[in-house]
Image 1 (tube, rainbow, N blue to C red):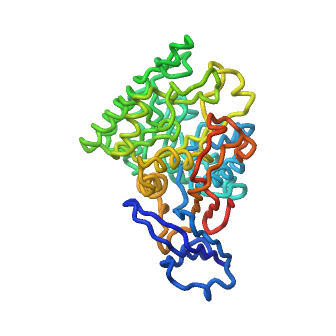
Image 2 (tube, rainbow, N blue to C red):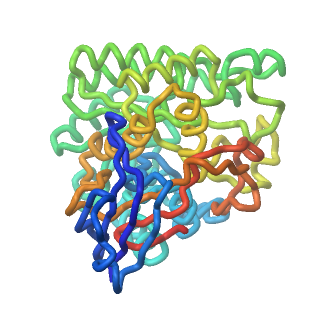
Length: 427
């Protein structure tokens, strides 16, 4: 039995909209018809989803997530994390390797794939670490990790502090046609700091994380990427200085791509209401000037894609306060509604622009065969209610953790059906 999705509104990168009927059979899209086509005789024996008045898009793709398994299952696991992602409309996610054990061996890669196949509901693509145990001292076995199925190498959670180690990693990755994904942070500038260096840190007498802690590594790494020819991807860009460096590198033909998170697009340090650690993340919320810089960079193509950096933590961990609590906030379930409400509803972005940066563009950046609604493509489909406003409610969060500053926000653009590889995984 297949699935007919009838009368859904589709949109492309040029913001051209059309109403379509889509047939899913097994795990593939087999027909895409104009909604004027009469398909009633063909729907017999199939599940029918009436998407009239709803947006139908390719399944969202998130290339930066933390599923916490193995090692931190009290925060999240592959089962709860993939369900949380499905609720947010995501059908493909790429999990970061800062687990325990870290994803630096073939056995751990296989563990992720096996767990995702048996307990997950959407596609999970693991990254492998750049260095063993993320210690920055010795490269992992890149060839073995590639053979096992990792999609790139990153020490996300910590920056690679040694320029020589990063250059060696880039040269090796380039020789294998694999990307390096970098968490950019100079450790010497961030010790003892929990928020950005700005008005909030000054008001509360806190040491601030300076913008240059991120930008120094971006500048170093684009030079190393130019020297080695690697595909270099910058994680969670948050500062105007990083934007300037990436923009310049692209002008000089360096193979650099970049990502930004919803929270860095909609919040600044001036929005933090108090010493509530649900507002603590890494990179931290920056100044309004930085927010404007990353918005402009996404709009002009300097930043390529949107990711969530979904980073769950248990309530008792976040209750330790701004200084002692871990960095990180949830991302899956509010990403599209936040950006739709903030940017599309207000007329700043087109709907096609937002959808593209969460579907086809991440697929293109990482060479993935997903992100389209074309005949023959994987049946990864998200159906979104663009009209009904709903509050973000703690009790409705599917993730095992609840650490988000967006509780109580009224948003539009909520995914209502998620289909991954031909199966309804959220409704």
